[in-house]
Length: 128
Image (cartoon, rainbow, N blue to C red; front, side, top):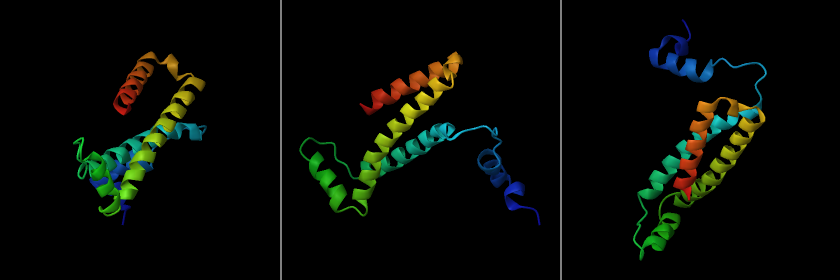
């Protein structure tokens, strides 16, 4: 029987984009930060949605809703800490990703660089 991940239509797509992805032999670990950024963003969105389910943005009850999340919601303290530390890790990965781009001369590809700068500015506007 043939390998299921190479014959099933959906698994074949996942296999060709995630598992059997061709990569150059001289690639270094610096090239992982783009993927880490995507993973961090997904984690931030998911934990943010879980936190938003229990958060009250009213000026009188905001603090008590955060206390409720940490004390009464199952694993609410963990979700809140993952969300808070995930934001810091996200920006660390952004700065390392930019540093890698500067070191390897990725700014020579102007269109890609401009899109990256716009995404960075939008991220900073959203975060702060």
